[in-house]
Length: 263
Length: 301
Image 1 (cartoon, rainbow over the protein chains, first blue to last red):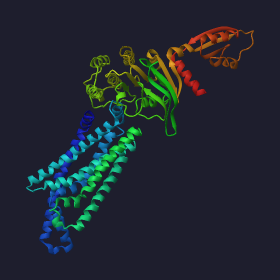
Image 2: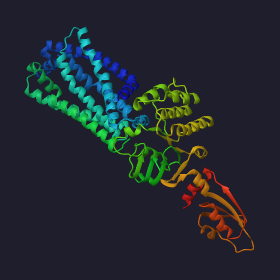
Image 3: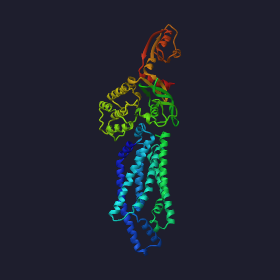
Image 4: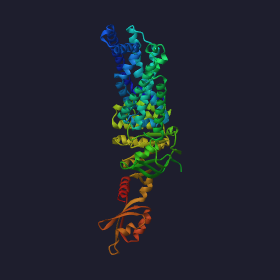
């Protein structure tokens, strides 16, 4: 299994590196945007006579929400430009692991003395490591940028908030792989379905966000990390669902290959 | 008799397209079987089923005395497989590919690898993607044989090779069988090559087995006879000849007939003698003639 994981990662090292660099770049860009937005809100709030009470209230809430650069980073990063890069990353990664172009080399693996299950698990592990390296590692840039700029970042909140996102991405990747097997390695069908899944995932997360936002006062929200997580990231439910999706996708992929011979 | 591969009434369809409609053949342990058929005859489908890459619809398949069910990883320890489409990782060097392969089998015959790669003039330090088509085929063959498999399944191993490389590969295929006692099952279009090294042949066409058996046996039984009959005797007709046991087809040729036969030659000659022959010439058929005859005959039927 180690041989397959290592080979897959080695084969895809350039795309992983490229995605890492792009995301570090986006982190710097977002930091600039973060400062511009906060400063413009603060400047506007210094002259509240020009604003309606509703606008003032909204800006104050936004500033509280954006108090943590880590949170701002995640929302703007993963729900903005980053998502398109990520979908592309998943499509390429999913395709390159179980894609049509790779079918011949898959035949090589499937005719070696190793069970299909182990091959599949190795491929998933390689994909998960690639995603973690490509997307999570650049997140180190966030505290680094914060510390350079003298802004403190609440790492606990940041990391806790990050977990459901990561799980979501791994689930997204698992779906991409499954669909690419189901559709007999047609990468763009799987990429489109993955985008659909992401939209659903985001909407689902937002429903939780709104539900909590109505019931919890924003000023006390930050005092409770758990409530913050639940309020902004849907708490543990998306996490559980994400893990569930990953398991279901792995088992379903195994079923397609092992039982249905969809090679 | 011990068989390395046993196939009985194997069936496989892709939707409405029937790829195999009940083919049967056995490959004796330690023998070389040539698996012949036209494009689309079902050769690759059969090989992919033997390798467990495709599931059969019906029939029985046993490889190394094991049914193809469940986890085949232990069975695959005994098999060396060279697919029709090159399947090694292109960004690996030859040496890396061999090492990668040996991690699954936990063995590699280094001496053999060196011997074969030297004979093919294969530079194992080069990236596979930089190799020519023929060299890639040779690389694939070296990888397939590097683990000393009991059974070697080769799908069109000689296609795209120049005559020198072909000759070398044929020599090594024979050697795998003679020296290592491996069973070789290989598909090919190049019938003269099959004739050189195969003990048995299986000919399939449009998913049906047309012939499966010893090569010598078919060459002994399958012949052509050019015959003329004495003029003052009763005129012999095509129908009369085709009704004789062992005569598959009779055609008029000049004053006489050309007969395609399958069976005991002495018995057939004795039947003809009773019809007052003037001249009889028995012609041997090579595998190419036999193949064309069987496949075209099948098409006519």
